[in-house]
Figure 1: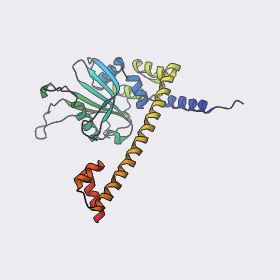
Figure 2: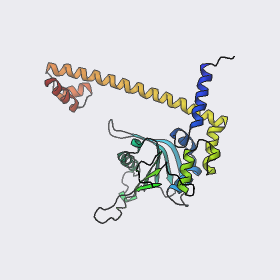
Figure 3: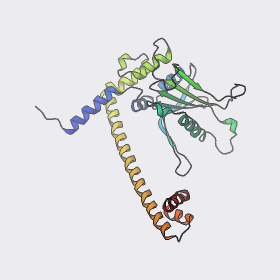
Length: 282
């Protein structure tokens, strides 16, 4: 019997993982929709219950960096722009906590910061849509879609600021309804079982052809490298912060420098230095 090499075993594991992928897994979803105007246009028309929406640009994993020092940035799963300049952030969130209302608010606000150039009027701000496709019904009311819109509390009238948040219930089952069919396709592991050809075609390519599976395997490897690099950076950051705190503690013990001077020397926030001083006095 021929002994399998480590590479053979790893390849088998990758192929097994690919066989289980669905569009509800963001690794596959990003590959299917990245730069795929046809599929993204189809998806948005169903979710928005339209037939006339035209997509001009689609990009997977678009990063929005926070201009604030040490501020949190975001990476959008699928970023799209339509013919009217409206911006769409399409996110796959399998875990309920990933679809937290505050996350939707943060994504919406980050998108707004990139919409206006200097001297543009605020009324020129385009509409934006943050769309969470969740594996289960995270809202729990049984609807296929949940639309979040700002309104005046006293009158119930729409605020009309152009900010829209939509939750798509990935657990919704109704094969007679467009959203039900769409979510059925997002749950499928095989293209044969899917309703919509525009989605089935791409799923078949990435899961059932050698070229497509090769791309998915490469994506897995790149993600593993990125995650390892991220962990290494986080560990290095934690070590550096702990060293800075230890230095600050020694300086505080000597009592010769102000909190502001210690903060400047150690690159710690002044508030952090004060907290360390309070702990030493306790």
